[in-house]
Length: 44
Figure (cartoon, helix red, strand yellow):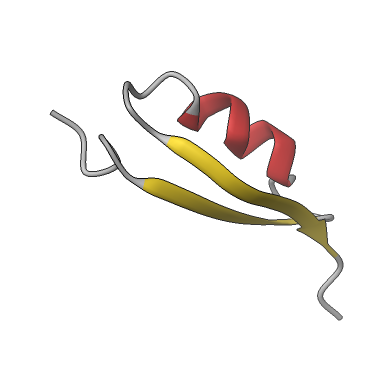
């Protein structure tokens, strides 16, 4: 059982780190999760 199972997820990725869509693809493998927001931001 995962800590993310059956949860709604908000993802904020980093342009120079791990982008949001990459995290989203990993989260999609957890059953019952729903990504409600995913973005990649530039933090300077």
